[in-house]
Amino acid sequence: MSFFLLVLAAVCYLLATGVCVHQLMTRRGDPGPSLVPTWLLLAGFAFHGAAMGVEAITLKTLPIIGPVESMSFFAWLVAGLFLIASLKYRIPTLGAFVAPVALAATFAALAFHPREQ
Image (cartoon, rainbow, N blue to C red; front, top):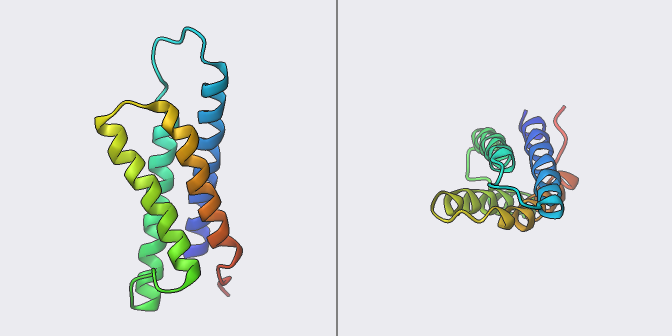
């Protein structure tokens, strides 16, 4: 279950990366930033948090001890800090740099995540 939720988080981070980069490359006279990347990062953050919660219940400890769990926690933390910062500071361009970092750390965690039977 946690692997599936982590895959959903990675898909959301991937889509947010694509939308952020697209907006960064094509923005010409656009009056305001789109909230689509922020909502995608929020969905990825929620799926990622749910995956970490399931993992915590399964392991009966916080899922930040091993290298796989710490990479997953790092990705979740980066996405969460961006979401908090985006509430106060409206810097949509920052999403084009944050989303790939969260995506790369999530992919690193997925590469070594033990598959469920």
